Length: 446
Ligand SMILES: Cc1ncc(COP(=O)(O)O)c(C=O)c1O
Image (cartoon, rainbow, N blue to C red; front, side, top):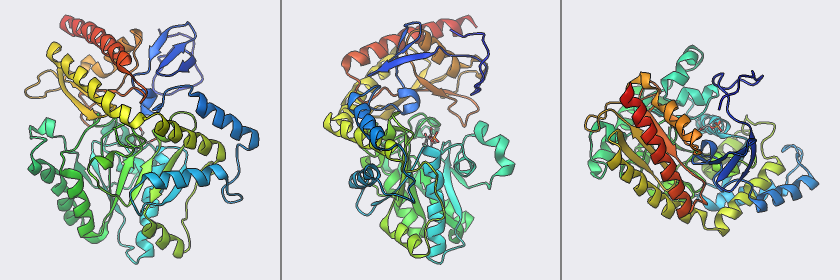
């Protein structure tokens, strides 16, 4: 599977993957003709599947007109229409949209807008953004300072302004009952304690992935968590930022994951499923009150050259149109339930699957050496890479991370596109079963 020929590209390691030839729907083919089922939608991006002809047609039509118009020189029809459409999908009051080209840019934009808002309303002492461990908010230094994932943050720690963190609500590790309201309050109240410890006048915002992404492995908070977080933010005048870079766009069975708990943030960051792999696209969506204060005070001192370009926006519009006309959010909810129950079935077969979690088609399972104590597998087994490689050879793409702040533990995201049907679920589970069996034989040998 790996080629010896060196590449000029360097991403994470020297090992190589096959060359992509084409992709269609939930499948991808390499240049040798081998077919893969894209069981993670890339990095939870290709939400509507590959090569959607309506999106390609919309992009082609836009390309014939213009691919770029600098946002300070021209307004464009696709960016205006996408902003209006996006605002129509958010809770009341979140009507202002700032386009970017990816998730890190969306998060950077959110914290910079929050800071400028604080200055505009005479609260310049507020600058700390509290986040959670583990979490992933992006790779640029501002977003990385919010990220709680030791292996990614440690090398850059001296270059960043350290931001306060609270633990993510990992009830499954702490042995707490997810369905007991006290559990949600227990974790949410850690935010209040942190605000008080830091000094309430210094805290600008709290950023949270309503349903966790790669760092936590699709962590779903207890039901009372998000509403309580909102209450605490209100009590201390702290802005609430929802990082829906991965969870936004329908994957959890609602367009925004926070809709599961009806909580309204002040700012939302969205990206991956927004452009769905057709164009680099993301957005920060903010409350009118926040934006108006910043504009009245002289404007938002921030922006990216490619932001709001008409080609990416035409793709984004067509993606939302496909999601809506084909009922993909509803499909993510029902097929997600089916896939989740099939993953849970695998737990009865494989003792080392310690947890299955997630909502809709944002799903994950975690491997452990002991389900009772949730002790992780030995780090040296390198399970998070090994199982991905075995599945890859079997024609299934899944996505993995170390579960415990990047240091140990192994979880795997199973997040196929929102067009997944029952037959695809069978294929995914068959290939996963085969891969787990091979993996299990390997670890018994060691
Ligand atoms: C929750 C979350 N926020 C931010 C980001 C950063 O997005 P990007 O890689 O597009 O910069 C990611 C990417 O995985 C993410 O999952």
